[in-house]
Amino acid sequence: MARLVPVADPADPRLADYVRLRDVNLRKSLEAEHGLFVAEGEKVIRRAVAAGHPVRSLLMARRWAGPLSDLLDGLDVPVYIVDDATMEGLVGFQVHRGALASLERLPLPQAGALVAGARRVLVLEDLVDHGNVGAIFRCAAALGVDAVVLSPRCADPLYRRSVKVSMGAVFAIPYARMDDWHGGLADLRAAGFTLLALTPDPSAVPLDKAPAGEKTALMLGSEGDGLSSRWLHEADEAVRIPMSPDATSAGVDSLNVVAAAAIACYSLVHTPRL
Amino acid sequence: MARLVPVADPADPRLADYVRLRDVNLRKSLEAEHGLFVAEGEKVIRRAVAAGHPVRSLLMARRWAGPLSDLLDGLDVPVYIVDDATMEGLVGFQVHRGALASLERLPLPQAGALVAGARRVLVLEDLVDHGNVGAIFRCAAALGVDAVVLSPRCADPLYRRSVKVSMGAVFAIPYARMDDWHGGLADLRAAGFTLLALTPDPSAVPLDKAPAGEKTALMLGSEGDGLSSRWLHEADEAVRIPMSPDATSAGVDSLNVVAAAAIACYSLVHTPRL
Image (tube, rainbow over all chains, first blue to last red):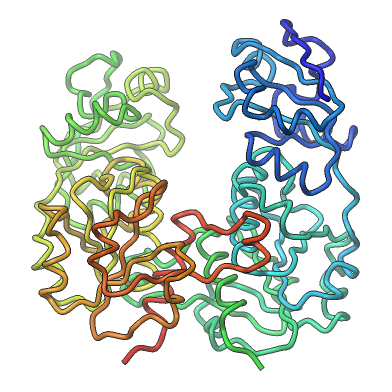
């Protein structure tokens, strides 16, 4: 049974897991060093626990302990109880969803092992925005993509904002991170995947005319620049989402990466293939 | 040729068009009263002007006058030049994209007239979030939807954030606002549209099996509650985006409204129909 521990000082070292949650650089090194991540909000915390992540501690205003009492009953960890001012002083903003949890990361599978049993895979190259990564995981999980492979520099799916925007989908879909960007696609090709590169290039093949394969990996590039030329070159086919000619003439001929990913995942799962 | 007018006081009445841009209630009444809206950022301002919206004034730090000089040369309006502190004091946040413009709204067409020549229409019921409305307009324009019809209470596409997130797509796709929510779908039916209601209901027809029609109107509901029961009842068919059974069992069985709209627009335009 979890222990409620009131804490008044935002600088109390017992709260160190939760410090400055919007400071991406600080969080990156802190979370790597301690192998932790932070989940925000009751629903997401429950999903993280259900996915098997050991809990280090929780942090919340006292009024949130009631709604979470069934969860807390099953945990043998401290629950730090703070007032709103202490919370804001510690994490750096007003936490509207009430509760935070610090959880342990689990070892990720190797990319090759991850995709061995998969048929439809999303590959994300160097996405920068954590919200976009979370939203793409949500689309991939909801639509039935089997796994996600990340480039070495792609934004972290377990960063607080990724987890939150994903609504916990980062716990529902297995993923791996490539060790090596340069040769990272080789594992996928070796596993029998057809590699499709999503691009706005008008000379690419429309998504629904993409070559059919038993196993398909769809590659999405970063928000600003799209896929690297190396990955575009390594793909079996460049594919595009067809844009309206009217939109092209009006200069509104692109989608944001989440909308593009949603359509790509839908097409990946629902376009009839051989 | 536009006149550069330095202003130092954020309370200067000449800057009244730009006051407190994040105060939705204030902006709603101010913009309705004066028939104006605010565009942010060079690209979006250029698209608003190109779409025929008369400019009332511009507001920017001096360093932005250079990149916009060709546009300013063709306008006979004041360009208020402020420093960053005055800008922030006036609008209520740091403006990263540099320039703002106040432009005149144009009369919207009647919904019936708007859809007379359209084949594929999106109908938005009571969306609350301006960013979502902007993102959906971007999807609709890019993918080739012909027009958008808004319910009487749907968030304003010309609110600053809608315009910004749409990347100017709100100027590229024609739209109308229904006068009457209760009977608002009658105009669409009278114009020969098949009405499809997008819903997460598992008993609905999968999107790509939706009844084909010469003219199709796809209805999207608000972020929290989806479509009203009245509109669901009035639809010819309820349609859904198929969710993965694995996702359903993991509780990650929904998409955010923008991802759903992206897939729905794509399917509306690309699913072969009779």
